Amino acid sequence: MPEQYESVLPDLSRPDLDLLLDFLRFRSVSTKPDHAPHMRACANWLSSLLRRGGFTSEVAETGGHPAVLARGPEAPGRPTVLIYGHYDVQPEEPLDFWTSPPFEPAIRNKRIFARGSTDNKGQILAHILGAIHMLREEGSLPVNLIFLIEGEEEIGSSNLDDFIRARRNELRCDIIAISDTGMIAEGYPTLTQSLRGIAAMEVVIRGPATDLHSGIFGGAVINPATALVKLLGRLHDDQNRIAVPGFYDDVVPPDAAERAELAALPVSESDYQRETGVLLLGGEAGFSSIERIGVRPTAEINGLTSGYQGEGTKTVLPSSASAKLTFRLVPNQKPDRVLNLVEIFFQDLLPPGVEMEILRGHGGMPYILDTRSPWCGAALRALEATFGRQPALMREGGSIPIVQTFRDLLGSDTLLLGLAAPDCHAHAPDENFPIENFEAGIRLHQNLLRELASTR
Ligand code: BES
Ligand code: ZN
Image 1 (cartoon, helix red, strand yellow):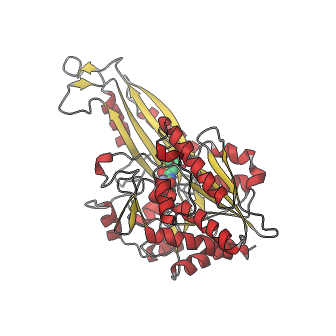
Image 2 (spheres, helix red, strand yellow):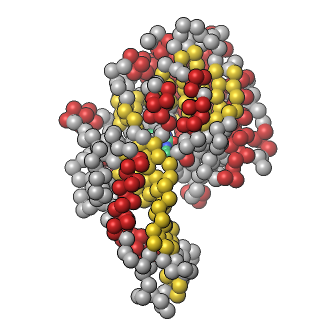
Image 3 (tube, rainbow, N blue to C red):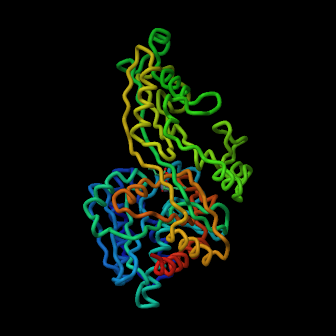
């Protein structure tokens, strides 16, 4: 049942920051089925905020968690701009590593700490409040403005494609803008030029009918956990390249100019080392960290489960083992093809005596923006006006699956204007968003609309 605060409707007379804190209190974790009431309460809150701010707005059904779809007053003859964001967040676990509870937002060192503060509640709310204030102060908006804020981005946006198809006419727009990416360094305005795609799968290895005594049977029965880690151990070669035959066939390698652009960005190897806390950075031989993240594909193990994981020891030979994997993709890789190749690879390596099941998860296409477009020029001017500094062009490693779908279904490109700090801890404990970035986001929205209004 939603907690009491979740039935509170937004009060627009409250300061912007208080509205953000209210938004952050919703436990809108999309992957947890029992959180559905929190998801709906959060969507209702957002939709009424937009309505109170002068938009027409609905909580729209998608087949999964609802989306909020809102529209500003008509601006005849002006471009139509769609702002996309998401109100769902990643799970808050592991809880022990949070300094303050993830759904009780706290302010420390001029940053707001809460799950979703950066990804994506703080960033999308900055756009919403930017528009609401502009409408209040100026009586109109310089563009036709649509907000689409979904509740399933963190689980692959699998219901949104059909929603966009069904409501294609309402969603038609000249350009899309999203703030759900990062800034290369504190105070450095950043336009993200590309996102990686993604393909998710779970590999389950099954052996004996039940868990066995590892002394009574060990040695005579293939251990599914051992079989699984052997397969996983073959994913990369000793140069940290992905060893799945055909995996790189479609990969467009970065050219010399792209490599030079990436090398010129003010991000160093030691920045990555500091942010991650590792002893030594590592990845595919022959590439820098920024290249490995921005323009090269990867295979990652996201979770491994088998056998006894509690305190102490247990001499068990587990009946099954499973691993959750995601592959990050670059142009022109396709999620389905990659998963087919991996499945064949594992099937060939599978020892007799165990069975394998592959469960396919979400997929998303990579995205790359043509930076010579006039829309891109407008975004760069808006970023420069907001932050007083020339923006950097970045290639990001994360994924926003709907971005390429927007291009395929609506024919519109997406501008990615990131507000996340490099140390925002997205998806991790102590996620945080600088108050300064929230305030800059509100101004950025207004500068962006002004710039886009005069673009065609
Ligand atoms: N905001 C991120 C995407 C992102 C993060 C882009 C950093 C660029 C840099 C988004 O909320 C996200 O986490 N997406 C998921 C998508 C997946 C679950 C399908 C991702 O990238 O893991
Ligand atoms: Zn995320």
